[in-house]
Length: 404
Image 1 (cartoon, rainbow, N blue to C red):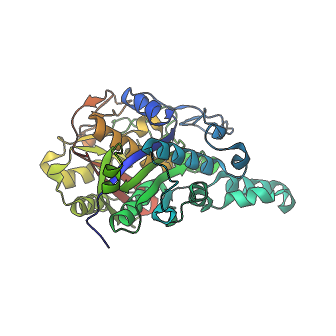
Image 2 (cartoon, helix red, strand yellow):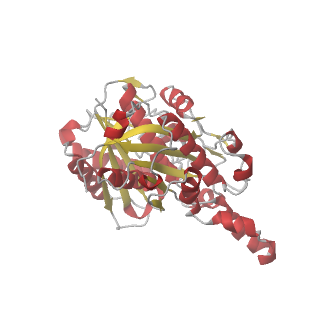
Image 3 (cartoon, helix red, strand yellow):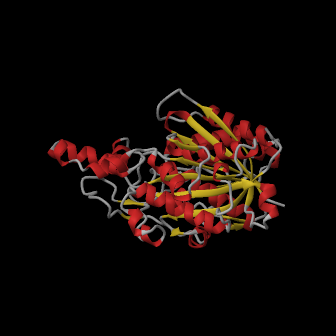
């Protein structure tokens, strides 16, 4: 095993509520554009909230041959399309590449929508009304398997169901396998599509805002649910340099922790442990970090706890480190969130521009960090953290470094 290998991000694929493809996505987030709109995918009339970060202009046939689209659920369609975008962006032909050295790692919260739809059909009409083709589409592991099949990737293929931190887990695992020499390349990230079940659940626990997401604002009222896919193409840095690839950033390491104290309430100590583990694995200290791409859901407790963890880890520097919450624009794409936001972090590091936290109006004394309010900021970034937290206390933090 060669643990001295370095891991580069050379391709980015994005399907999001503010744009499809890295160019449209990046242009939108540095402009502070909101992707929140009225939900059209299902009836929201019984709910208090009718808005979310819906991807309304996604046509899978723009990316995937029509004959293949019909065999894919919407989550697989988005995940495969984002992977195609990432491979295209990496400008790497897989024709003469060993397929056993290509892995696929995907995080998700809800998996495929057909599973939810089948249960509803079964409940209403009975087993006779359940379409067999839809059963084949509904398996959660189909998402990563479909990416592997599309690219004929024969390396490790894993799906991570670790909820809203899932994409960070997926990227971290891909990083590990390239670093230790088992793989040369990894297609890694996350996907989730709008789910009536998830929309209902977050409404029932009063975690959703009715109009806008305001991370770190004193008057924040909750999250906005969304959907999308964020895929990074990772490769061994030496191979990337050899072929003259465009390198967005390096992944230096990651840290995991589990709070396991409450199914929904996050623990600042658990988050701090994950951040400290990430810094230790990367061989750096809190003094080296310039920017944190926050989990930043806009819920009262989550934002407060994330700020407490930042204060614990960054000590005297907690107001000095810039922090932004992209969910203010994108909504919360659950398992896709940290994949989309990791892509944004890589672009921020490369471009030297920090996306803003929009909808910020009233400072909160308990969240007295520099949240880059409302307007993007030009600033050189050498090292950034990408925070990802989930129900059950699953915390995953990536360390992303500017390539130089």
